[in-house]
Image (cartoon, rainbow, N blue to C red; front, side):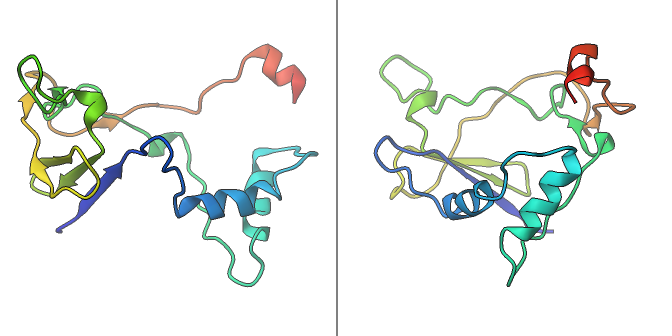
Length: 144
């Protein structure tokens, strides 16, 4: 499967994104009273009656632990020496199926290979993060 994922970072003063209209539409329907998490799902589906959003519920077993993967980077700094670009200069990362990562320092720039300084630890595949549903605190339970 050939999949690439682009992760773009906003620049100050340029904060309009496509997803903003979705958030705005849903925000109008997420108002009290909300009695259960399922109320959020129902209201997100109601937010656009003619073409409802496809809302998916996830459970504890959906989450994976990516912390200890062998493929993790030690650093995503695009430069190596003093004066070279640093992490906050990155405007976009692009992850490719073959494991390579590309970066942009300006949005109109072409994608370039991110220097890969890999951490030498961990496993090849992420493990399940939670073995059971997370418990809520007693104080949170009392406020439900």
